[in-house]
Image 1 (cartoon, one colour):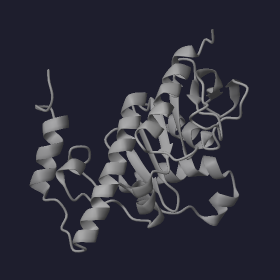
Image 2 (image 1 turned 120 degrees about the horizontal axis):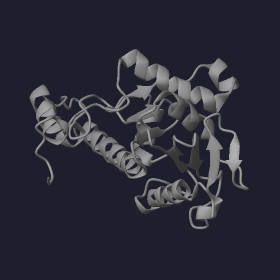
Image 3 (image 1 turned 30 degrees about the vertical axis):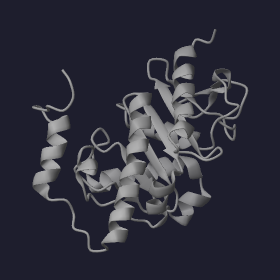
Image 4 (image 1 turned 135 degrees about the vertical axis):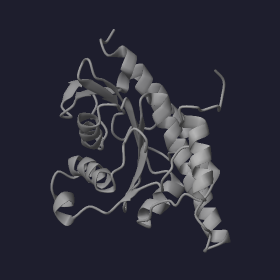
Length: 233
């Protein structure tokens, strides 16, 4: 049995949730799961349909995206994941999809405005959309530069990746992350639903107002604040 069996199984299970949640079509997505003690992460192999994916297909790479274990080529987005793992040490897993509504906002190059309490249950800010990458970045080490484009946008905005666990990449699609694979997948599903709700709200009323600060604070704090009272003990 592989010494990386735990993260391979976790990675497989997380990847299989994407089609179950309607977040991917065909092979439009991937999940990775990290083992920081061993300095590696597990990621879906490139272009393998979910209906044929097996645990043993999961590829293990190091933080430079070099192959460590596995017979298949890792996801084409592997270098993006590697950059985020290198720079954001609190991340345990990363999800990338081309889910419809989140991707539509990314293609429109727009932040998703905070319009309702569903959004505020998870974030106190708009979902950020990093600007499209420069020609130089695209023509260079594209997937690696994608990671740096995300990092630079968060630095510019002053966002904490531990509080804002999702981003859109302009012209591209969403990335989410979390301390665990389950949380990263959860964030991906939440992002898609927030994106869908915001699109519908803006369609119904193009002048829809942003959510009031009092409601943003109340909904976020009751789930995440020091005196949070959402859920069970």
